[in-house]
Image (cartoon, rainbow, N blue to C red; front, side):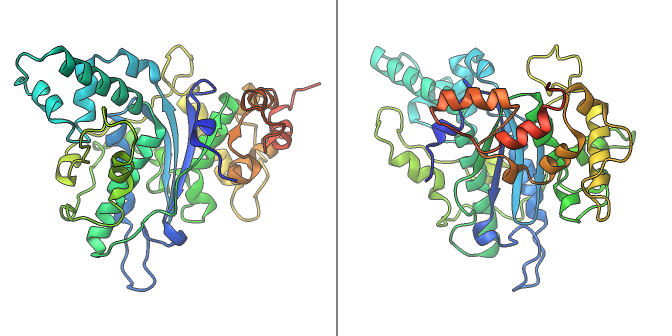
Length: 377
């Protein structure tokens, strides 16, 4: 039975989430088309760029990503505190980077609002409250990401219809062990799929991007070019606009139209979330990048045929610090979606989440005990 999104994504539980979305019928709509012989790998660049552009608008940071031929993975951190710190004008400015917004808001931001009566100001305040909440909402982030990529692909193929399989899947990452495991799982996708031999060769992954930036000759991230402006209507476009139009509250839904691609493509790219091994930064990945890279490279080598499931060298520093069993970590980094359900974390944290959600059991407790309780008595 499908569970309400509000029970799966709750910032009261954790700001960290692993999300995944697949193309319709799991077709290779971002890779080689077996019917036409065309290669659509450039669409993977569309997804990467749009993710970074939306991260620059939303209060959501991207810790890791991997865009495959028929699906993509993201590790996201929601910064609701940042969104609460934005002024009302900043909230409206950010939202109207994505949507046209009500005429009153457009006039206000353009400095042509003039004197407004109290009823108008109250309406703008209500819109601002709604937009502020949406700008720290993963569901809205994913809606816009998926719709805009679908519009581009459908326009390029000159077709209509659904591009994505359905709503995205998510896993709450409850602690450092879960964050580390999910990031490694995401970054190692191409190696597991035998699309790359090493992390640095893995195209359209966050670890390859980070490693490329370490090279002296590294150039700034390139923004993928959109071949043409897909402004014509497609069946996929209503994914956001129709849901907005059907909302019950008419006070805050005065004509919301997603901006055209020519406007969205001009949005700046937001850098990936930084690493901080000192854990002093509030909004950062709680590891040193050097330690994480060592873990990914060691784990990647163990995923090759003939070596799978074995870490024969020294145990990576992060696995020692977080008391993670090396061999069970390989299992999690290989089949995270099968090992765990809607949440990943140490047994104690999964048990706490059971109580919060008022359920008796969460899939993954057995795997958590095997992987994350190595030093348990």
